[in-house]
Image (cartoon, rainbow, N blue to C red; front, side):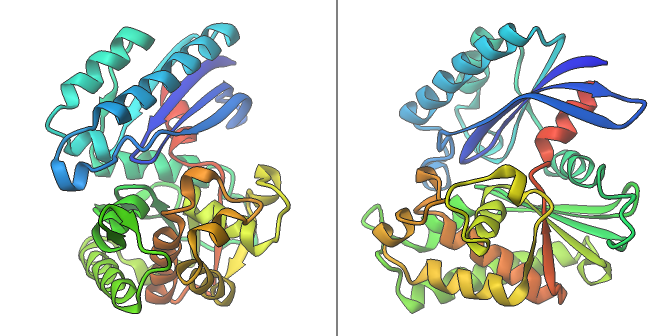
Amino acid sequence: MTRVAAIDCGTNSIRLLVADADPKTGELTDLDRRMTIVRLGQGVDRTGRLAPEALERTFAACREYAAAIKEHGAQRLRFVATSASRDAENRDDFVRGVLDILGVEPEVITGDQEAEFSFTGATKELTGRADLHRPFLVVDIGGGSTEFVVGDDHVRAARSVDVGCVRMTERHLLVNGVVEDPPSEERIAAMRAGIEAALDQAERTVPLSEARTLVGLAGSVTTVSAIAQDLPAYDSTAIHHSRVTLERVREITDRLLHATHAERAAIPSMHPGRVDVIGAGALVLLAIMERTGAKEVVVSEHDILDGIAWSVA
């Protein structure tokens, strides 16, 4: 057993996993798994820079995570940063802050590396399932980008495109800096067109239609699953490896895109940090399912974070 810590810092959230890894059995035993909405990517698409308040929110979460890592006595730590910090002009401020707090430099990984970690984390538990057919298509819908990976036991093809729930919301749904409540049909149509263009990009590299099982990762997908199950609160156990049909995803996406802020916030399983961006995230998922012909999505709570932990172990 090796006790490891992994941090995944994305555009919308930062997450920590402290776990015991057993290479012989291929199992990770969670000791601490947590997520904090920090919106590190706030305004990056418009300004090209990480906002001071977004950096401070992220550093505050890092201080909490440093205490948890010390408490559990993790032997190794890897900190991976994704889309927002990859794009920002002032990413050196981010790197210095993380190094001061956690003692490691954040690795600003490429989209292809991000996809590799996501695939490993999502499929390690699924490869022996007789009811799931390979190849898998793993889609990780983040805040700033979406990763597409097709593979069997290993990655066959991967592509990252700049379509995520935060980026799409900021590009298409903001009016005077506030999300339109609810968005107009014209704005929704423009957002859908942007997503379709990104899928065209992804298909040039990844054979999306060859996949037999669609596996969906990250907060937009898990929140859609929670809504589909009418959960009274967010429940990782109920969500992990749940399946949501195309018809249900279509219904939920339509509901979210045409709801007001207050109506979305009233959904019991909705994290407050996702209220404004969940409509865009659900639409990305729906567009992927319609493009690939997937009748359902298998939802995984294990994703890039678990892949990072395995890379450390």
